Each structure stands twice: as C-alpha cells, then as structure tokens.
Image 1: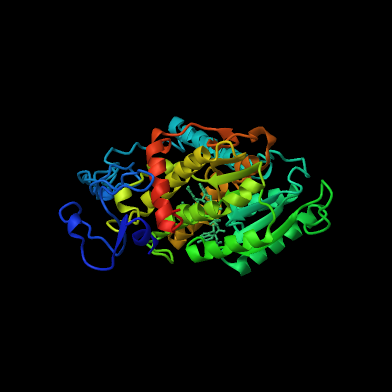
Image 2: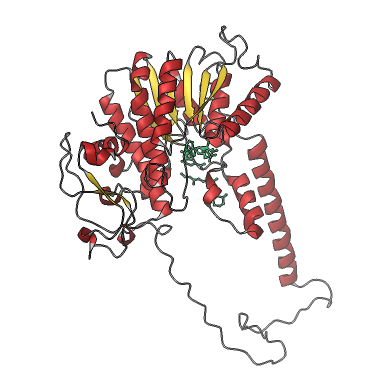
Length: 447
Ligand SMILES: NC(=O)C1=CN([C@@H]2O[C@H](COP(=O)(O)OP(=O)(O)OC[C@H]3O[C@@H](n4cnc5c(N)ncnc54)[C@H](OP(=O)(O)O)[C@@H]3O)[C@@H](O)[C@H]2O)C=CC1
Ligand SMILES: CC1=C(/C=C/C(C)=C\C=C\C(C)=C\C=O)C(C)(C)CCC1
C-alpha cells in the first residue's frame, strides 16, 4: 500500500460505496485504489477533480452503448396477381422475360455483363491482395546493414509473440544481443528456438555463435518478466542490473487489448496496469543503466486508438465503470504522455525516448475478442487481406531502435517510420506531469 504510506493520495476501499460518489455516478465503485480530491503531491500536482462518470462521456460511435436495432417495417403485402412478386420486399411488378423469343433480352444481357464484370473484379481484387501479401512491402529500415546493432543490447518486452517477436528477429539479424522480457518462460523459449532456427535457415551465422564480428547475427536471451506484477518487474530489473553491463535500447512493446475486467497482482485495472504502469516501473528502474550506456534509446509501442482515450484521474482503476475499449485507449494515451514527460526529464542525458503506432497488425492481440465460430473464417480472411503482417508492423519499432536517422530525436510520435502529429490531449504537459506523479505513487517509487 505504497500510496497511502507515501503520499496519502489514494485510499483503499475494500467494501461499501464511498459516500463521495453518491449521486455523482450511478455505477457503484468496486474495491481498489481511490484518489482523494484536491490533494497536492510533492511535485505540486493537484490531484483528482470532482467525479465524472466515464459512461456519460461522449466517445466515438464504437465506444457508445449500442442503440437498439430498429426493425424495418414490412412493406404492404401485394395481391397474388400474375407477374407480381409476393415478397414484401419486392413490391414492384415483375417484368415478363423475353428470353427465348429470339435471343437474350437487353436486361438479361446486362445482367450477364454485370455478373462477368463482378467476377472479374473479384478475381482481380483477390490477385491484388495475394500480390500484396506475397510480394508486399518488404521495407527494412536500417536493414541491409547486418552489423548495425552489433555490440548493442536491446530489451524487448512481450518478445515471444506478434510485433515483439518480429522486432526481436530483425534486431537479432542486425547483430544485437536481444533480451526477451516475457511472462511465460516456456512460450518465450519456444519463440527463441524458432527465431534461432529461422535465422540459420535464412543463411545467417546463427545467433549465439561468435558474435564478435560485425555482420554476425546477435544473441537471444530469455528473461522472465510479468508486467502485471510489480514484484516481478522489480525482480527482473534486479537481475538485469546484476547481469547486464549495458542496455542500449529498451522497447516497451508488451500489451494487452480489451480484456474483460481484471486486476493485476497489485490491484490495478489490467490494461492500465500492464500497458502503462508495469512499463512505467520497468523504465524507471532501468534508467540508470540506460544513462550509463548512452547514447541509448527507449521505444514505446502505443496505438492510434489513443485518440479515444482520456486520463480520467478520478477513476484510473475503473472502479466506477469499466469499458474495455476506453481503458485500452486510455492506456495507449498514457504511453504517449509518459513518453513526452520522460523525454522532457531526459533532456541533455543522451537517452532518447520516442513512441509509435504500428498500424493494424495480425497478431495475437485480439485474443480477448470473441468471434462466433461460424464467422471466424471471414474475419481471418479480412485480417489476412487487410492487416499488416508482424514484420511489416515491426518496421517502425526497428527503425526507432536502430536507425541513425533518428539519432538524438526525442519525444516524438511515429507511424510508418515517419513522424506524425498528435492530438492536443496527447501533448498536454500538465496532464503528463500529473500522470507521472500519480504513477510514481501507484508503483511505489516516489523518492
Ligand atoms: N496488433 C495491432 O494491430 C496493434 C498492436 N499494438 C500494440 O503492439 C504491442 C504488441 O502487441 P501485438 O504484438 O500486436 O500482440 P501480441 O498479443 O501478439 O503480443 C503481446 C505480447 O505482450 C505480452 N504480454 C501481455 N501481457 C503481459 C504481461 N503481463 N507481462 C509481460 N508480457 C505480457 C504477451 O505475452 P503472452 O504471449 O505470454 O501473452 C505477448 O508477448 C502492444 O502494446 C499493442 O498494444 C498497437 C496497435 C495495433
Ligand atoms: C479486432 C479484431 C480482430 C483482431 C485484431 C487484432 C489481432 C489486433 C487489433 C489490434 C488493434 C486494433 C490494436 C490497436 O491498438 C480479429 C481479426 C481477431 C477479429 C475481428 C476483430
């Protein structure tokens, strides 16, 4: 209970409804951390404002509660006169076909042409999609130079799957010593084994083999890290500080997407806890090592969905209400605010920090989205056709981790290896400072 001990910013409610909330929100709080109103932190941030209920916020359509579906009124039934459709949806009289009376009629010919055109379009579309998939963009930023990351140590969280795995593969190929920070050792070892085999098959010298020469592939190391446990993050960092003489790049990649309401080991809402708080503690505990290895880099994987988030300081733990989309977006907005505040704090240290969105990528991130079995093949087809592959999605992470083009660049937001503009809410310095202060309290690192 760091918060109550250190700053008295939060109070813990284990049962009952806090009288402060009565009348302010129709949704009674669950147990967990509660911010006190109007308290000032040591850094001068005035904490939480009066209660607002997130359910009353006006989010974009996908976040709003679904409206009841209105039934279409059935068109009046027609009589069963000859040549008139009986279907309530086709009330117009049917024309008599002239087929057979000396060749196809004009409408029949047009239907034939339309069908052929539709078939050709579908075929063309399928070919185009297939070409995109198989020939597709093989951008390799900083790529080609297989020794670019030689001698560098990179830590990637969530490196056993999706974007993290693809980022690890590429940085390994570029010669880095890659530490995979993963919550499940077995899954991580399996992924590491596959990556080593893939590299050997691709003609590389094989990771772990004398990585002393530029041009050689790097090395893969698995370490256990559960971002949903502050204890695990601390233990992981202790091991890092004991065993690793340097850390050149930290990639905060791991993430969880739209899970049902769950809490971390320390009682935080899971998406905020893993995506923001776990990485917040990790980064802070590794800052000394990053500074002593400077020039060094921190790369934060956020999402464009930050646009639908809001840092509602009065309910950071989603006790009053839980909307899984909102909470994911909030955690990704927190990633950006964290990056910008950290960049400000790191000025002059030669440690840079940048944040990115990878696009929509076909990974395991959608594991909590329930899709009925029957439509799953359709979704798979759509994601296969339109989502990026993990290798494509990882390009911006690799670019920010390794490219000389971004040497010295800090506090910026990237997509497709280019800087992009942010919404004002992601650039609000006072919100960023306040979030930093509160996060310090939540993870217990207040100095
Ligand atoms: N895919 C996409 O379209 C987009 C992804 N992103 C972001 O990209 C990042 C990577 O996601 P992606 O590769 O797509 O998804 P995946 O689900 O494939 O990978 C997520 C990784 O995070 C790990 N992870 C989850 N929870 C924890 C935890 N408590 N402690 C440690 N590791 C954890 C997972 O481990 P395990 O395998 O053990 O579950 C996995 O390795 C995320 O931050 C996500 O928000 C952003 C925008 C779009
Ligand atoms: C969202 C749906 C799917 C999967 C999505 C995946 C794998 C990742 C999406 C991540 C996003 C949008 C992250 C943003 O930060 C399925 C293809 C599984 C099914 C449809 C819905």
